[in-house]
Length: 265
Image (tube, rainbow, N blue to C red; front, side, top):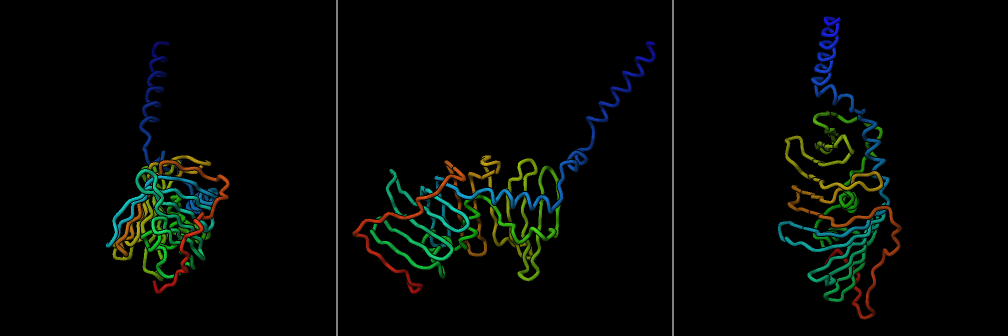
């Protein structure tokens, strides 16, 4: 009886040891989901966010400009963005309303109200960065538009240390688009576009996530445009999502000078 007990005890001990020492990679494989399911989940998360209201600090840096400002935004998908800039002590500096087709911009200091169509480098005049409005909208919510990839398998798909690494290759533009996704909450932490020489052209970095509407929203966002030597950095203090956004308009005084923007400016 005593001998049987020792055999049983030894068997249980060996079983526990083998279980505890199971290779980490085997455990990781159990959490692995297929590429198409991952892309569908990421795109579904992006589409869950219909509106975003937030405030914080905006940093902009390029070859001729380097400054920061307190800001507030009201964002309504698919293409409406109101952003206000404030100086020290909450002094109004400027307000902008941007859509995919047109814009309004009120320069509070000089009491000038500009309006016109989204053409040329107008966003560089307003936000001091020359990026497409759809990229700016996605950057402000820390997401990537994967609509065009829902029916396409990634060219590369890897999983290691709780991270999915997904790569799409565009042979027409000669670029690779790679993003890293945390497996536990499906938050995208980097999105990098580089050429076939391995030179980075554009990179987004996302951190300090908050879980809102079951979606991980980053509080710190950095967009590095290496090709055009410009940087946009956002540090949110407060974020609210999917709240009714009705005040997408700019209030201007009666004595403001109204200026129709022309590309010749």
